[in-house]
Amino acid sequence: MSENKEITIMQSVYAKNDEVAAQINKELTTKNIFAINVMGAPGAGKTTSLIQIIKRLGEVTPYVIEGDIEADFDTKTLQGLGVKAIQINTGGACHLDSPLIGNAVEELKLSDGVLFIENIGNLVCPAEFMIGEHAKMLISTVTEGSDKPYKYPLAFEKADIILLNKCDLLPYIEFDEEFFMKGVRALNKTAPVIKVSGKTEEGFDEVITWIKGKIN
Amino acid sequence: MHEYPITRRIIEIAQEFAIKNEADKVKVINLVVGDYSGYVASSIELYFDIIAEGSRCEHARLNIERVKPLLKCSLCEEYFERKPYSFSCPSCTGEGRPTEIGQEFYIRSIEV
Image (cartoon, rainbow over all chains, first blue to last red; front, side, top):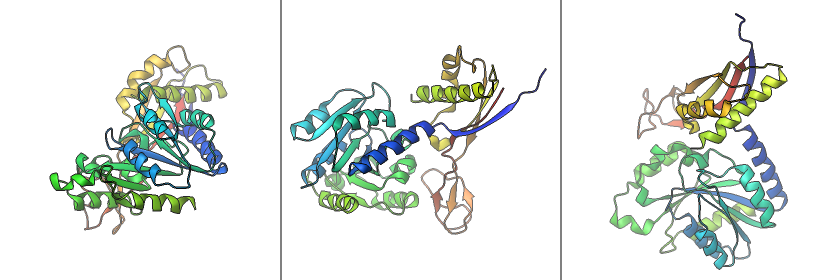
């Protein structure tokens, strides 16, 4: 019996996705678009936070790509506010990947502004796939509990900015902020953590300062 | 559930290298999967046979090397596995920082 011949490959299975992501990133940069990959669990308030951010952007033009497994409620809400938004339905897939974004970017005809790509509500795999973004925004909430950095480390590690949403509920729930921050800082030394509330609108001015600091 | 498209991608890459090397049959695919890559090895195995059918990878054995995530202590620089709800170094009072170890997801080689 003949021996097996081994052929070395050493190729990341993500390679193709990452290649497309790099292309999209370059294209967006050329068009003077700063793209933010918005990640968070279902119900964390991703769309609500986007609305609060977009309301405060002033002269900066917002664009939104909405990722959902199905339905287009969020896109309709944003379009109702006059925002250029497009829906991607993944039909079951749990994250957005670069080829999906590539098509949407083409369709949106973007130039000069900020593109928010709202990923599928999921704390696991959206953090693993680059989709051409310049920054990752993670929206965590006080109602999810303070142990989330310990349970979903990758999302916290990869984030460039972390919004801690639903802060208006802090007096009514048990949320160990020190434990939360200890976990966040073990994984990520640099991302600002901003306490916000989609309900009372607190904290979003600080988010705007961060975004404007990135695009200027 | 995202193992299905990624398993198809693994087979595509293996097939591409088999063709390039004029091999009719891939016998083994050596895959390295970090536990933090988010991929479940058993799920990849489940899809593998179905997707590989009719390709040069049909009946190939999938050899998956799992990699446990390691943190690196910021004080003593030792690499260690973390305990649940903690990032503390077991040897000193330092805190571990994430490393690339455990996030791997690549095809090391194929055997033909």
